[in-house]
Image (tube, rainbow, N blue to C red; front, side, top):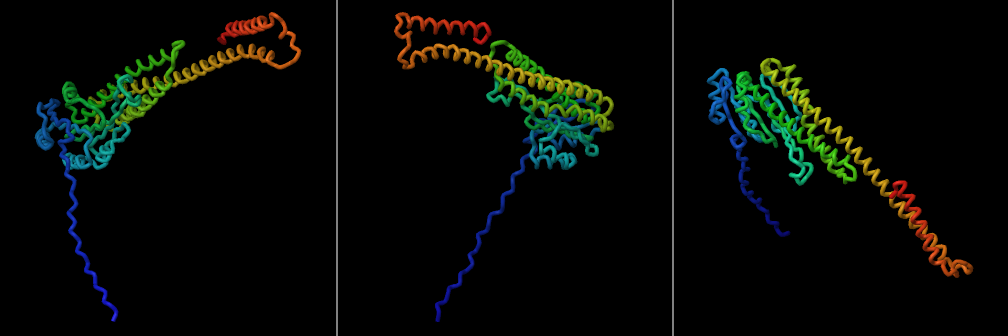
Length: 357
C-alpha cells in the first residue's frame, strides 16, 4: 500500500488587535480666543465655546467671535455641528487654498482674504521670503463669527471692533469688516516698504559705473507677482459682495466696506505700478549690461589691434630670407623698435580719441 500522507491541520489564526482609532484633538487646541459681544460691547471674559453659545442664546443682539488657527477636518466638523455651518464652507475652510471671495450660503456669509507679510531682504537668507502670504477666512451667521487663519499672524481685533460701537451693533458681519480692514491696511504698509526698495533698485541701475544685480530685480519681481495674486481679486470680490448681499451687509456697514475696497484698489494699483517699474528696470539693466559688454569688446579689440602691428613687424624680420638689407644695417634694430612703438602709440591715440580705451 502506498504510504499515507498525513493531513495538515489548519493553523489557528491569531486574533488581530483592533485598529486604534485616532484620538480626536480638542477644538480648544486650535482656538486663539472666544469672545462674546452683547449690544455692540465686548464682555471681558474669554469663554469656552459651549458657554459662549449658551450666553449668546440668552440675548437678542449678541454674537460669539471665535478665532481659530488652521483647524483640522475633525475640529471643523464638530464646529459645524455646534454652529450649523454649511458643509461647503467646511470643505473650503479645510482646503485653505482659496482666492479672495465673498460667498453666501443661506444666512451664512463666507469671506476669504489673503494676508501679506513683508521682511527686508537683508533679514532673510532666501530672497523668496521677502513677501510671505497667508489666508484668513471669516464665517458669519446670525449669532456667530468664526475667523480661521492659515499661515497668517493675526492680533486680537476684538478691541478694534469694540471701538466702532455702531458697527459692532450691526452683528457678526461686522467681524468681516474688521478683519478685511486690518489686512488691507497691511497691504498699504507693505506697498510703502516696496516703494523704498524699488527706489533703491532704480538708483542702482541708473547710477553710472555701478555694478547691477539683475538677480535681485528678478527676485523682487517674483515677490511682487505673488503679492498681486493675493490682493488683486479682493476689490472685485468686495464690490460683488456689497451688490449681491445687501440684506446681510446692511447700509451702515456698506460704507465701511467701500472704504476697504478703495484701499484695496489703491494697494493693487501701487503694486501693479511697481511691477511695471521693475519690468522697465530689467530692460534698462539688460541694455546697460549689453553696452558694458560692447565697451569691453571694443577695449579688447583695441588691445589686440595694438599688439598686432609689432607682431607683424617682428614676424617679417623673423623670416629666413637671404637678402634683407636692414639686417646688416648698424641702426636697424633701433629703427625697428622705434617703428613698433610709434605704430602702437599712434593706434593708442586713435583708439583713445574714439573712446575705445
